[in-house]
Image (cartoon, each protein chain N blue to C red):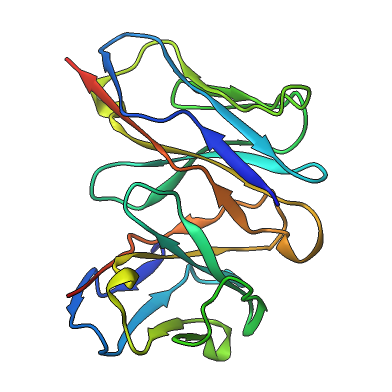
Length: 115
Length: 115
């Protein structure tokens, strides 16, 4: 079945460092890909998404490109801030059959940014 | 606009007792999801509703879990009887459509502890 694998954390960075969180997926067909973020004490929020190959999703300085050839959707940010400390989840949503619309999540990567 | 509202936020019960969680989705959203999130893991789908119809309940443990969405708006998830392994966060989400690229909005979740 469909699945998402993301790099395990925790990841600890200094402020203004470059961030990469790796995410790869296995899916039938052409899924949509998402990054969700969960700040401490809050619910999951959509950070960015991409719906087809070579699409780049971006938001709040974060970017991820849908790479079909490598089945990847790595999250990047050029300069992280303390306020980016959160848990980041990569997810996919199949576009076929009865599972259409269901989100399949990775295990999450906890990011801590130190001043 | 109000987001997805869940209650209670926290619940502690003894094993073998029943428990219920309530979710009020964003107004107008026809699709509602219940997810289970174990500690250190990503959310996993329990059930998805389109309006009042459960279109995917394949992951719902039907021996002890039940859900309903009367009138296609609010939803209730019930566990009877609860087991120690049910301790987790139960997330509700809603979206306007069930298509794979549609954003799902999440509530803050109900943290269940079974003792």
